[in-house]
Image (cartoon, rainbow, N blue to C red; front, side, top):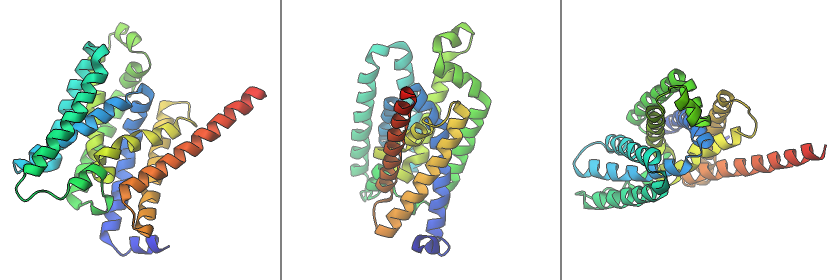
Length: 276
């Protein structure tokens, strides 16, 4: 009740709750594609490469999230190109981008005059510090993601479930896959302030993974993943506020607990069905 009372009193908590809703939309829609396509490692590579763009933007006096968007999209194109053309070396390239992006970002941030103390929030997030300007950016990104899902849902489905069949049907598989990775990249930027670059992959995948236990269609999985994502962000924020804990890490622990309970329940249900 203390958190609910505080929610009506403090603007920063209201902004954080709105940010949780916006984050849930992004991770629910795009996270479903990531889980079904099994490209979590790709998403992780994009996420960690983003720090390089943020550090460079800070060093040259630009907005860090502008640099994050540019770096995320470049990483998505590189990883997508390697995945489609040079599949046997995909994991090597992703691992290299992962490490290089983090290293470059830390070097740029440490070299920035007046050394930026926001590095911790970039790495681990702080939803309680979301500003009005960042909420506007999140809204723009969410609108774009929803629009892409509505316009290209059938194409994404075809590429995710049967890439070869999609090619035979004449779909531009390469462009569709690159667009999907670009959406993953923008979702990573969307979630940075909420859980940070280190933990973003968990929030991107766990709600969708839980939703996958209870749904049979991609659309239903997306809707349920959005609802679970909001449950994770709001309850995680409430627990972190009540016990003065880091908000990003608390949200991920809540998501992990929900996933483990759901996975155990699904396993027990399958065993019961087999016995019958």
